[in-house]
Image (cartoon, rainbow, N blue to C red; front, side):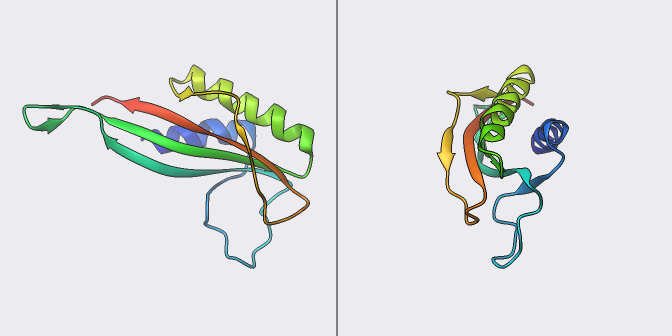
Amino acid sequence: MVLDDLITILSGICGTVIEQGSLADDAPYPAERFFTFWNESSDDHKHYDNNTYGYAWLVDVNFYSTNPDDVYTTLDAARLALKQSGWVINGKGHAIGSDDKRYSGRGFTAAFLDIE
């Protein structure tokens, strides 16, 4: 499955990968550095003979770390690894906020065309 592949790739770069929003409000962050993802959409790509011909996946990928330099280098490594696996990432990412002031964050939106 597309999300399983994404998680495997991100886990190879940084072992901790969680779904965005899955932490309880009062829970501490799971590690000093970690990825989150959120499946923004997985719309039908095209139709043929009234059947779906594939899906266009959009996934928000975010990386948080207590080391601001790590945020840039690790997110760039994720961008390159995902692109090598057929994902499309436009740009080098953007800053994202963190509920914990010790963490910096950056993210991007990754797109994948899953043809069946």
